[in-house]
Amino acid sequence: MAMMLYQIKNLCKQRTQGQHYTLEIPHLSLNKGDMLALTGPSGCGKSTTLDLLGLALGSDSAEQFIFTPASSSYDLQSLHAKAQVETLAYLRKQYIGYVLQTGELLPYLSTLENMTLTARLKGTQREICEELAFCLAQKLGLAAHLLTKPTLLSVGERQRVAIIRALLPRPVLLLADEPTAALDPLHATTVMDSLVNLVKEQGTTLILVTHDQSLSKTYGLQQAVYNLTQTAEHVTATLTLL
Image 1 (tube, helix red, strand yellow):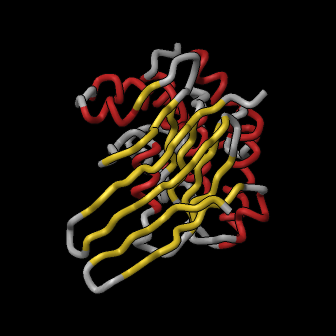
Image 2 (cartoon, helix red, strand yellow; image 1 turned 180 degrees about the vertical axis):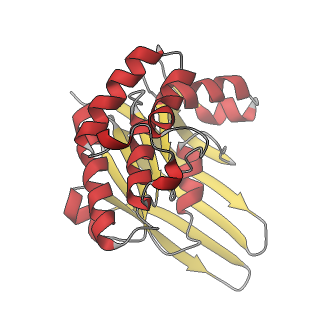
């Protein structure tokens, strides 16, 4: 039986910088192991949604905003309202991985050190981290570059290092913010293949932000789109599952 990860009902988030903007999520339920693509044009609210689901941003209102990464459930609306920053930071560190557009590797660390950084910060022993990293590096064609600095890797190789870094601690949820945006089509395919295969292998929930709606069909991701209602002064984006 599938285990629920997120239960969201009638969530609202507003921004007032420049044009007034409101993001509405009438209903969103995600099970552990689901793979979801957030698709839409620039400015529709993809990054805002990712920040909400990554616990970095609180909603202005929500009838339900529940996160259940393990045996306990957390009311995120309440945690943000009460400024429970330590609890939110713990949940992010313990259960969530993140892959950015350009990898954001530390240039003064080797490939192996970058791969193991997040897991070591969570307290996993160095030897265990390095053994796991080597296994993943072999799968992703990076075993020959473990002592190389990131500046000597291709952009596609750096993205694969970032994927290993995010997945090495085996997070419950992986957030990927347009991880192939800076890549040519060939390298983008290699990175997406690596990402989806590892996510499936680990049973990790994936939420992927992308402009490319075809990725949903190619990789079997459920798709959510933003329906925009716009006036001269206000934009409302409603997130809807297809």
